[in-house]
Length: 406
Image 1 (tube, rainbow, N blue to C red):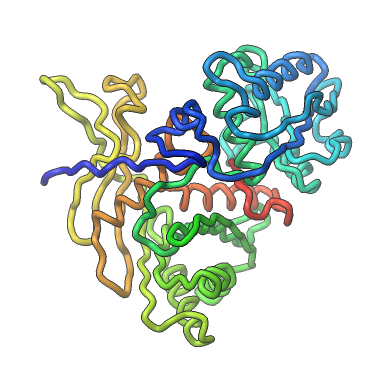
Image 2: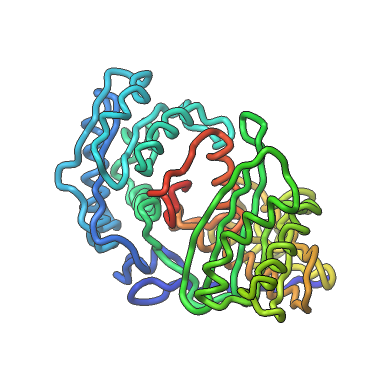
């Protein structure tokens, strides 16, 4: 069984292309598109106000090789951001109502309380801020205190801020083969209901990114169909999309597969979609795959990003993480690849192109300029949406079209 190397995607910014986001911004290419000004406020305990204001100043004007968000992102930030200070961390949530109207609020939280999405004790705080229709960016105490001068940390923070208010830092220079890529994820809420999250990417005629979610009491093909049909209508009617790829994290249930087919058939029956449409359902699996290693002169280490093994017509594995983002002898150990499988379709496919699309979409994760996501943003962003909604964070209408979940 022989492996192949997939080409690394080229990223498109406003005024040029680059292999990595940092290189593109450093060369002055600027973000692909976004706002011209961002009104930022700050919520913090009194003892960290001075430190977070120093960090904000570095974010705005730059530090070291990072020339500042205003210069690199072509945006105007407030000279003196509004600050809401509280006595202790226990007072953060109860003082959310004091946050002035703004585009985004920076919130300083304790290190030991900022954990993975599923266990995040600050979900109540995020829920209250979401009710204001304001995206939030959490900052750990240690970041504010010890890393406020780090240009790499500042650049990643700038990317998150820019994306959360609706900006798109970069896109793929060359579109992938699908007319439309839809990421799907399903999860139960705290009260036992079912929430479905979707992320939608169109890259053929023009780059479009959107997301949606819906909650019901029980899962079924009829419900899935209704959710998908509602989200696809505008793309089918306005952009005349006739080719669809659905990405699911893990193996999708039969209800999801049937719901996808039903949604597309309903669009045909309502004369919105041509009968000659094509679709495929792809399972993006993260578990149960062997680790890949690269051998150089008898030494074993991390493989190159994009290394792929085609297993058969329907399946393959791909290293979406690896060298050069990780060193050959990475202390994090060998990377575990993703397993990609075509589980349903109504047309022929090229498994190499299917896998390449997954790999390339992992490079569109806008929260990091130095290390791409292991997962394609189709499934990653759908998953994050349902995590937030299942935890009680109801995204308001003001969040539409923005990557508020980063």
